[in-house]
Each structure stands twice: as structure tokens, then as C-alpha cells.
Length: 598
Image 1: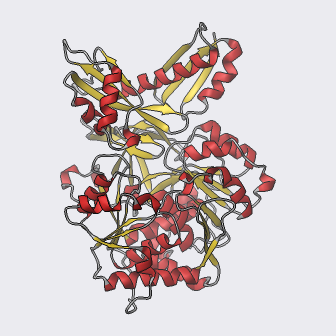
Image 2 (image 1 turned 90 degrees about the horizontal axis):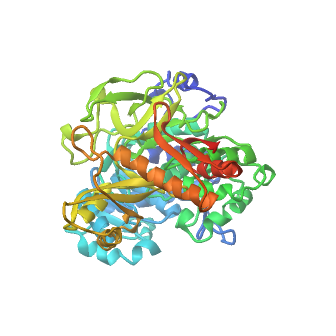
Image 3 (image 1 turned 90 degrees about the vertical axis):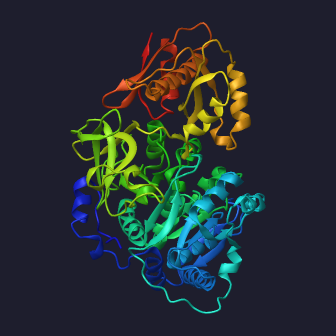
């Protein structure tokens, strides 16, 4: 789909590419048909190499494009024979693997595929299945098997259970496929630990155009081998790592059913990338940080041409270390499920601007918007002025399922309110500086603070509770809670933490600390000021790390404050002997900072 001589070095290049409308570049309007064209071009070429445990010693299972296409057709025909048609939801609780790719494409061809996070609790999955009105549930794999019975028992209206083997068996009759451009073909749920996540409907056209401009951003070609170890229930793992490369004729290496979560997979990643001649490696910042600690020389991975960081911000120092050692570009695309995936990316052929998420991809637009205290739009921001980032383009969804029009996340003229704070510079580069919404991002998964706050409000002594993210070098953020007690009441932080631990079913959402304050800070309209609490959480975290570095009895100075350009700025003062150590310590976090000698 992307001409081999295409250049992406600037925002102007992306705009020139977009001068030809998607209809002039796309040979089909949904992913099953785009994949069918790729399979027709390269029937006997390798489409997927599957390493079942994601380990160097695994015996690989290879699927050609022809074999995978046949599997897609079988899935579509078997679902049609089971009564699935347009508008019917096929939920998927599946591990990574070639059969999962076939199920997702086959379900999109006839119905609405709905991948679900395997790691949610049984009750949460059941609630999602009911909200989706799933007619069929395709479930397999060790993660889900232990809780499958509990999931179905908790459903108000249990869907019909099918296994991947059922859908890959010879069908009773073939099913002619038709393009489904304007029809809904997928339903994703947002976040990871967000109470009842919102449901995001996406169309064939949404996916096809996103495949086009994502491929432009990453430069996918038939010669590529993409290392796929992100979870396939998430848009990053399913689309960027698997479906988008495949519809462009590239092959993928699926590293284990559990991906990077599999025991030993991260440790074997560089050796696997070397042996499999991976050209593109995609990983979240938690994994990128580990990979940066054991980087090979460029000579060991000569085929590698691109690193893609996904799911959350990557500390600048880690990105710089990877780029300097491996001598390949690193891009940090930014986007969201509501737009199918990325809407910005660092220009593939241009200079890297560390800390930026790049420029708008073709057909996408990004701007910063001024809002009032109630979050209402008051106008567009100027160059480099921080505001709420808004996006528009053909990959953006039309609105959440089951949410009233007045509660949909749109500004005027259909611009989507992303909930992220940021700025756009004079060259069109986008810089994320914070979040307008409360979501806590732990390892790329969204945690709704309300889950934590509701648990704490059950204590009779709690007057106010607020949960925010505390910076963490590995996970990005960890949840912590702040509490204000009712007058005359007492409660120890350990008591409140124990209550939260007992009450919160999702382990990722259990706060790491509960901090009791005399009074929580409030905004001018009386709401808890979580911006100040986030700054306090960052201050406490960085101060503890710096004191551990310099030792007891040594002075430490620290300021963590809002900044008009960077969002948050960290300034530390330590004894001169520890300046370099403090710089290395703070460089693990995605914050602009400076370290001075006391």
C-alpha cells in the first residue's frame, strides 16, 4: 500500500502524502480484504512464525499467507453457520497466536469481534460480555481456562462458547465475503482496571485507513519481520504488531502465547530478534527498560531497522541509550483505542526529537484546546501552549456504545477530546505534558481512581479520598491514595491500606501507599485538586530515591513543580559527589529535570 520511495521526514511530508485521499490509496475497505490481497500476492511466503513459549528453545510453527487466509475463511464460514451476521458480537478471550489472528480477521469478516483483556477478574469479564451482548465467546488458553466456568456462571445471558479448533474445522459450506467499510466490525473496551470500561465501536473503514497511515509511519514492507509480543487483546499488540504488518505483506514473529508476560521471554528477546532477523521490535516502556539493560551490538541484530515504544511514555534516557547503541530510529507513537491506534509518530526518516510523540500522521489532525474549569472548550491554543489535546481524522470513532450524545467526548466540529494535556510546536511536533483525565497508567493499563476511592470511602472515618499515579521507573505509574479524615475520627494508613487490599479485586489497582493529610487540596470549584496530589506523589517518590542514593544524614533539595513548556519540571540538589548518580536516577523517568550540586 505504501510506495517504496515514500519519505516521512516531517509534518510536511505527511501532509503531501495525505493530498491523495485514502480511497485513492486503499485497494480495499476492511482488514480481511486487505489481507486477502496480500495473501494473493505472496501465498507461499511466511506470514507468521509462532514460538509457543516465546523462548529460544521453542520449535517454531510456521504459517504461510495461504494457510492463514484459508484459516480466516474457515472462521468466517463457521461463524456464519453458527448464525453470526452483521451487528452480532463475537467476544474473544484468547492468547497470542496464529489461530487468534485468524479468529479476529474471520470474525471481522462477518460480525463484530470484541477482544477482552484476559487478566481481568471473572466478574469483570462477565459484566463486559453482558454489556457487549456477546452471542459467541471464543475462549482458549491457560490464563482463561481456570476462570472460564466462573465467567459464564456470572453472565446474565451467557454467550455460546466456542473454541478456536471449532472455528478452524472444515465449515459446512463456504461463506462469500463482502467488504464492510462503513459497518461496525470491532468492539474494544477501554482501559484495564476501570470499573466498567467504555465500549469503542470501530468500522472497517476505521481499520483500513489506520492500517494505511500506520504503515506509512512505520514503513512496513514485504521484507519486514515484526517481533510481536504485545497482548493481542489490546490495539497495540493486535494492530501495530500483527494485523497492520500482515495486510502489508510483512511477516510477524509471535513470541509466546503470553507475549512479554511469559517466563523468560523478555530475557530471550534479543537472541530471538537476532535469530529471526527481526526488522521491527515493538514493546511497552516496562520491557524497553529491561531490553536497554542487555543491549547487543548492532552487528548482532543487523536486520533491525526500527524500535517502537507503545502504551505509555518512555523515559528519554532509555530511548537515547537504545538509539545510541543500536543505531536505529526509535518512535514513540501516540494515540488511543478510540482512534484505532496511533495518530502521531516520530518521522521515520527525519531527526528524532527525544520526548516528543512525533507529528500527525497522514489524514490525522492534532491541536491543543483551551478549556474552562468545567472542561468546556473556550478556544484553540497557540504554538507551544499547553492545552487538552484534540484529534480528528478518518480513524476516529463515532462515539461510545450506550453513552448519550451529550456525554460523548467530543469538542466542537467533531474533534475528539483525548483527555491528554500537551502542546504542538511550530514544526508540528506533539509533546505530551500530562493528563486532563484521572486515569492512572500502570504498565500501559488504565486504572480508574474511582475503584480505589470507592473502597476507601467504605471506612467510616474517611471524609475525602483521592487516588493518583506515583512515578515508577518500571511500571510508569503506581497507584497511591490520599485521604482526609472526618473531624474527631482516627484511622491509620496501614488500616486503610488493608481495607483497600481486601476490597479491590483487581490486584493492579491496589494502592501501594495510603497517605493521610489534614486536608486534601481543593480547586476553586471545590473539587479535589489531583494535579497538586500528583506533584506531591512525585515529590515523595523522588525524595525517597534521592535520600537512598546520598545516604542518611546528607542534605537533599527537591522541587517538583508545574512548568509552562514541559508540564512538570524536577529540580534536585544533592552533594556534588552524587550529582551524576542523581542524574542517572531521574533519567529513568519521563520528566524534564536538572540536578545541581549543593
